[in-house]
Image (tube, rainbow, N blue to C red; front, side):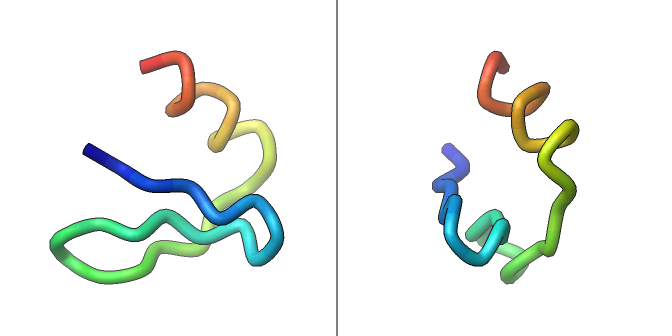
Amino acid sequence: MLTIDKVSKVYSTPRGDLPILDGVSLTLERG
């Protein structure tokens, strides 16, 4: 499961931290 840091706009994943855009973050939040 992905965790979201809305301040730095970074996804924490088993592969590492991935910088993302707001639009992408909204899409991934919905699953």
